[in-house]
Length: 95
Image (cartoon, rainbow, N blue to C red):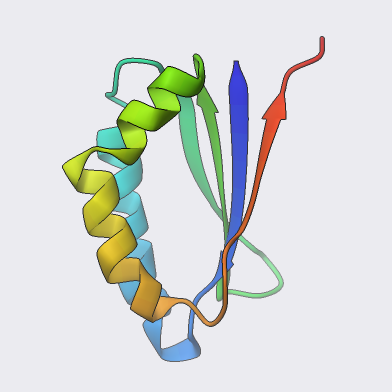
């Protein structure tokens, strides 16, 4: 199993737009073959900061996800809403 943690910050005037896009991405991605979980968190102290935490069966499932129309739509639209680059890390579960 592979866990992806992706942190992002929305431009202050784009928080609602990013939230709408992200919630749609999460809803559809949870239905994908190979997805174990897909969650989206908002920072309590900074409303423009968000974190995706995704668990996938394997790297093939991640590759398939990255090729989906809904993921590519999110990437295309969300890029202009970010205040800076995403911070993306991949982890493997040890226990």
